[in-house]
Image (cartoon, rainbow, N blue to C red; front, side, top):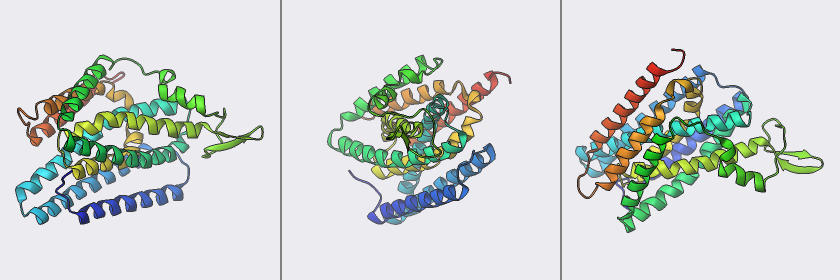
Length: 316
């Protein structure tokens, strides 16, 4: 695994993420359990996007300082931005599944914030492992890029075909597995994950929700991580773009929760993006599509799909 990032840049990134999570947790504990409104979600979404862009600017400076090349710095910054945008767009699909989980388990709105925060922590750890393993595999076995590419194309085709189908959580294999090994109480007990019932300690539905969200995120990561490897093989860029997108996932969830019906056609756009990225990966040894072109395609497809969704949304 080769990366343009020196050790000190890795350490700065880790320190920043830890600091951001500590601040976020402290702020969340200070607020206590409460329902997140659209204004609060919008403010935090803006904050996380701004922080991500600031890191990208810092990355540009660091690469320029290390390599002495403005062109290399521009390339790495563009790769980060493209990877970040791809992860953000694919995260929309995660959010709709999270919304389905919360609805299915009737999770009180005031508890949803904590569940998502814990889910984000788990996602960062698991995705870090998956990205490092994926980078090693690509470094050792170049042909695995074709496997990733084919997988993305197939996933995109399946997503397009099932875009209009309603999800049914009862058929979720993760939920069936969790219910088999984890007795669950019928009622919530505040924000507790465990409660006593008939003198026996059992899980609350909130623990079931956290576990299911964690499993779901890993499943979605199987799609999104290969997609970013199509943009860059630098593990530092792949990891940082993924993590910064995840850090803003909670605010993004509450923002889109209020406008979910307006993006009812977004799965079609995500399907097109996956097929495009998979094709880019399959053609990597024949023709390398420039990162700027990839970024333009992703932005263009998302913009067209969101405008299309808005114009055809019910009651508009």
